[in-house]
Amino acid sequence: MRTWAEIDLDNLEYNIKKIKELSHDRDIMAIIKADAYGMGAVTIAKELSNMGVKIFGVSSLEEGIELRNSGFENEVLILAGTFNEELKEAEEKNLQVTLTDFSQIEYVYENNLSLKVHIKVDTGMGRVGFTIDEAKKAIDICKLKNIDVVGVYSHLSVSDESDDESVNYTKIQLEKFKYFEKLEEIKYIHILNSGGILKFSKIPQSNLVRAGVIMYGVYGEGVIEGLKRVFTLKSRILFIKELKEDIDISYGRVGKGYAGDLIATITVGYADGFRRELSNKGTVNIHGVECKIVGKVCMDMLMVKIPKELKDKVKAGDEVVVMGEDIFEKSKIVGSSIYELFTGLSRRVSRVYLRDGKPYLINSLIGKI
Image 1 (cartoon, rainbow, N blue to C red):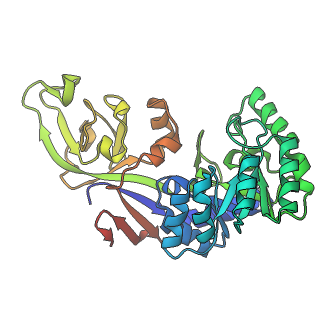
Image 2 (tube, helix red, strand yellow):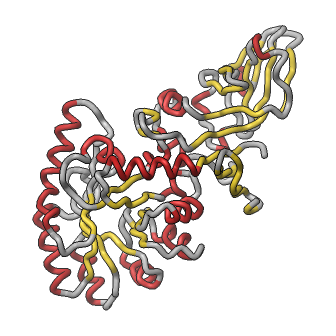
């Protein structure tokens, strides 16, 4: 393999148990939208199901159908809303849907659809959903029309921020949602996302939490203390050369190499999801040593300068850690987030699932290995 993501299933299982503890034994909805944040939705869903997770969240109808087509039978909620013309297929695939306005309730009723629905409440995200009073009314209307409301939920917009203003805003959102926690007839009451689980789970509210990126041991502020990192992006050295003269390196001639430098070409590029903003700034790790990227990151390759202490230790074919413990630092360099780096991994990056530190399953462009 040229470039691959290692996904440690033992660490994932450890994290699920810790999240359960952090959530004061609430049930967990595993958020596996965007191909499980780039980890592989079908494989991750099935592994999490074996770990005891019963309900899963996806973004779209297509993501839900992908799970069902794989034989996955657990509860699945479409979080990001559903167009009316998609609701019939959601019913056929036994997918739970999010309702965000009264016209959808009428559509479900008029078309005699037998759906399990969650009412989305906008407590301050400003994206989709009912106001508090509208949500109360929506639940009552659904009861009258025999629409099966199995959940009511909201989304915290700044729970991953630590400044006082953001913390206070999150507390306001939680207070707005408080009314719904007493609705014992509704199976799932949920508002705590990854940030909520880490910072606000002591608040006795909701019976379900939504765990997303924290399942992988990282968050917006880096690796989470007490959890284990699940993800490592790796590649290999393709070619090594010692420069005989000063030379410009890569596109645009922005990289500079000098006579005597040892330059290694690595088989990872922006088409794999390694961002071009890391050109001339980022590093990769070879044999435990940070090696600086020289020149622009190419579509399929990048070049690094090999430090003196590695000159007699590196060879073509050697393994390279492209992103690991430093993923937060890399996200800051590109002006983005860990979420975007995860979800930006391309199809051609093989996913290698580890058990006991060894490959357990490999998903690649040519299928399962």
